Length: 116
Image (cartoon, rainbow, N blue to C red; front, side, top):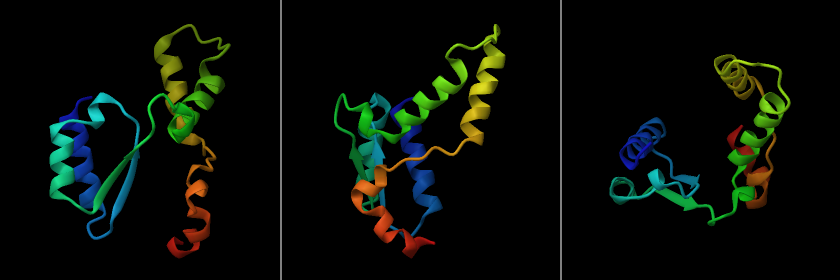
């Protein structure tokens, strides 16, 4: 990953949702910052990025997904081959719904009926 790839991803998100304002919550990975990201933000004022605080993985809902998947698949496993273990990891990620109350802290459950 690098900032150019992340900027390309942001452009795809903007294209997929052409008329709506977008708020994106991101961690502080190095590829989520830099000149390419700044350029996309400058060119698209309807996009806002809110970065999670440093050293706060507990606030990032994606971290809970990784933790639950590692616990379900790779802790105390019997699979001796890494490719098969990786397949099980991907299968768990794609077939599991992970509950998160992250957005509820920001009032999402109050406005969710508007989007159904």
